[in-house]
Amino acid sequence: MRVIIIGAGGHAQVVADILLRMRQSDIDVEPVGFLDDNLGLLGKRALDLPILGSLAQLSQFDHDAVIVAIGDNATRQRIFEKLRQQSERFVIARHPSAVIAPDVCIDPGSAICAGVIVNTGSRIGVNVILNTGCTVDHHSRIGNHTHIAPGVHLGGEVIVEDSVLVGIGATVMPRCTVGAHSNIGAGACVTKSVPPGLTVVGIPAKPIQK
Image (cartoon, one colour):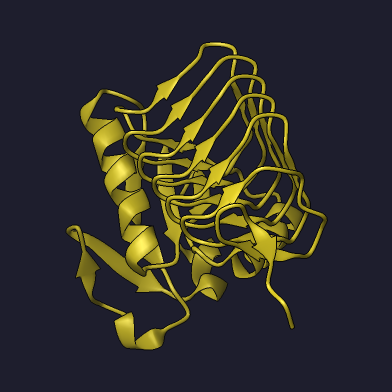
């Protein structure tokens, strides 16, 4: 399966490395290269893969699937939805070192990075990033276009709704819900549910006062 990576920044290179590791593990994926609208990158290489051109040129390159490898949730969602309307196929990038229970459902376009653990009964939405070394305990649900940053720990039966950023090293206690479009600060400890659209920080996590 020939895969084009959308984006060529740091996170895109992490995703490229995942795809290359998958290929080394005899999984049928072949990263073709990157597309990025920063034309200053055109013709350069990353991880020995070419930066082929801009997103508008996608149809010019032979491919079977794509993955949107951009860290910012809003940008990643916008591009994902545009490509879905164009009937593009989305691959799941799953690092071989990730430990995923057999019954976990992972929806298309998601990136599961090195050292991730997802326990039984959990569901991962479309276009999600489970970043390096994060853990998702049993029967949790991660909404679409959400980013779970490196080192995050989610307890059992946690719900993280759509387009949430859970910052580096944060903890969400069991059975808490994190509302859509909210942000959890790095290192925060969420001990009760967070309404949609809030930014919370600290231990225990509390809303930032405007």
